[in-house]
Length: 154
Image (cartoon, rainbow, N blue to C red; front, top):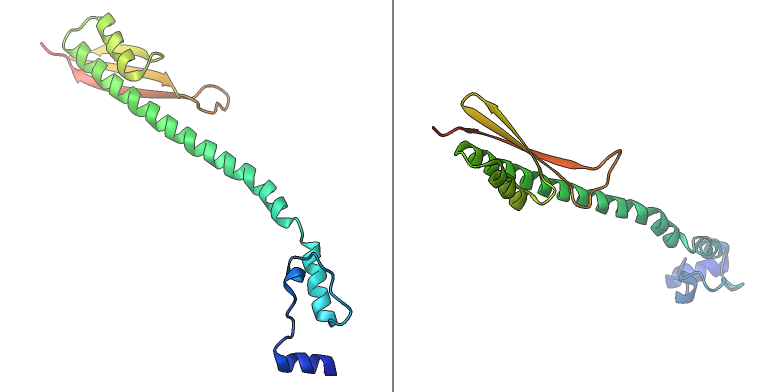
């Protein structure tokens, strides 16, 4: 062990650096030993790594946020379509006209809601389809569908 290292070890100063050297802005002086000089050079070589990591990670975070918001919008559109289908089935079951049913479905499901009515014996099925607002479209627009069946009142 060199005399300089021995003295530094006794004082508890081995591998300690000055605050300016921690940032990698100051080159170590000639009186530091090789271990400290290697650490300072290593710190200088890592400058800008946080910026590079942020540049790689930020698009992933933005994509995740867009996917979460799209799933939320799709869930909201599905609930509105299901509620509109339920109201439409109830109105058709009690004998309301097609215009009144369409107006009620548009009021609850949104102006772009499309309604389809199927009669099967004593039951009526209503299907409401609407687009997802602000959704990402992979190969076409995202659509939400709600279905409801009701017994036709005598």
